[in-house]
Length: 497
View (tube, rainbow, N blue to C red):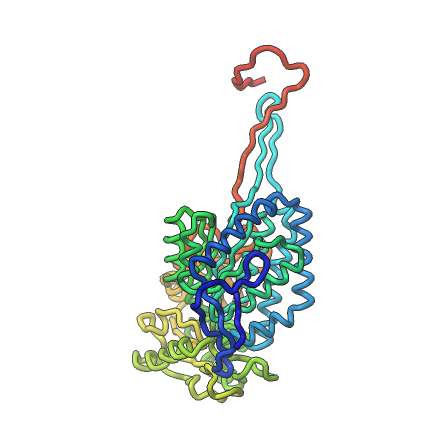
């Protein structure tokens, strides 16, 4: 059985603990590997390695840091198919989805390659007589990154390149469900010339998470996951004096106005609702149909679902893969019975969808409910699977009120051909990321990703300019250099001359 070890101080590290987790191939249901789980010894070793490496890495020139980042980018580009295959094998998403994930990850890497420009400070000359003031951006030290199972390559690369570019060292704790991508990333960084200990990978469960949250030498935590865990990470990390950005869950609404192109809207609902088997925090899980388009929109979505090919992501033509584990599949499937029990109309039952894969895989086909009400579990809970709910409202105003009343605030979209309505929507809606005829409005790498309300704990979004801000702290220097003409006593009082 293949064993996945920690990566500490530039090499694989098996450690002393006898605890481990099982990594499944979701398309077959078979155990593919065992992954080591960290205990106190491994946690201390990883943080200690990062702390030791931080002395050298923070003093490395910007040219040296940039060289490592460019080298990593070239290695990743050359070997991205290997990373795609790792993601498909352990997460289950189809190859095209995995390739898209890696491509978006590369955008974040390329942004970090511009760190010399991004770390420029300000300078004010002669604020008082021969007194200058300037600002510096300096690294925090050791930082922790805790990433989720649904994007095992992209989410670590939202944070790690920026953290390293700014001069920090990193301990990365990936999901134990699909851990191999993190080791692959660490190995590429080592090949690119990153000093030993500057990036460490710590595998495990809550023990590893709490170890990073509580360790005195970890200065900051970046997290992506469910809202309850994001809240826990934020509260625990800040209680231990850390800077924390914790991105939580979502219930993303796609509003469809009567004047919209219904074919475009139906295509978007299917791709955004069922891509990556709905296991993404920016998935559309609620379509808000504004009267009178509900019947026609549901009909077009149903027709498209019938043509989706669900199966092993490594097989040609498959458009949606399995869910990540049997337990998660069973949890998502339970909402089919909950929905019908609460009175929603089951339009498409994903349990009956034809599968191109081994029967032991963790399958649930695309599922569509109509006439969902806000009080139902289908609407209330973050299901995180291929279950799409259609809610019907009478007016645009009703749609905006519904979106804004939801406790989550990650992403939303509006489909319309009315520029005025779109502009009004983007102004009025209380959501962090908005799409206009774009169903999944994930920002490009030089903007920043993050929601509002219960979708974000902390003040700073991920990657982009916010990422540089999060991984640095500002120092302001006031400086006076005496010229040769200086003489006599100067008590330092400002002079308005």
